[in-house]
Image (tube, rainbow, N blue to C red):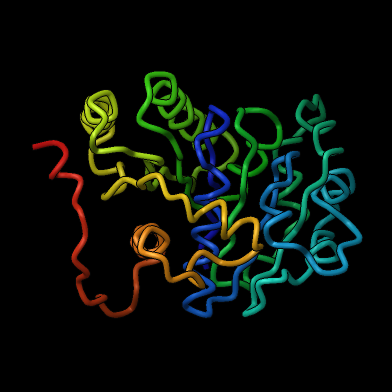
Length: 269
């Protein structure tokens, strides 16, 4: 069982796309998976289309009794054991809190719930507010999503610092496991230079290969469908990278057969 928080300090970099990509990779392997939407924009909830949802993460955080989250978890429209704890706009009211131990409310509300799943993916809002602190205080590991742009690089560094802060305070087991570079264009010199800077700063944390821009991603999201259910070349390339990322977070019992793919080293040579 792995609990992973997917975060960024800058909006619009594809954080929810990566969170849903991990859920899709788990769906493809028939892993029992829970997606917790902690972003008030609720984009992950929209794509997963929760079935008969009555309560949301806002209700769960407001109550925060041990184990109360189980009442808010519902099946998603994806099927194959992909459940969701959905979000709503009112979650914005919980971005700031002065209550004692307020960063532990999600962990308390979940109690033993994560043990029912192979994978739990928490989609965080793009800021280090109370919602992200709750997610990081609950997770075993963190995945930072960025783009190969100047401001996004600084956002990745801030996100890694946030992981360290939580690891030193409320969750000593938390570790950063990957930095995922999204919407990478190998023909763009600025992208190449920024990718090199990311690799120099964070080394093997940078996921290999970076995620290319893929026109098929919005299509799968509008269709409220797992990425792995689509057969377009672009979608399959992104799906392979999501498989690699899932292997990084949950190493397979047996080594997978190597698949030919573009390597990060090609761009840094």
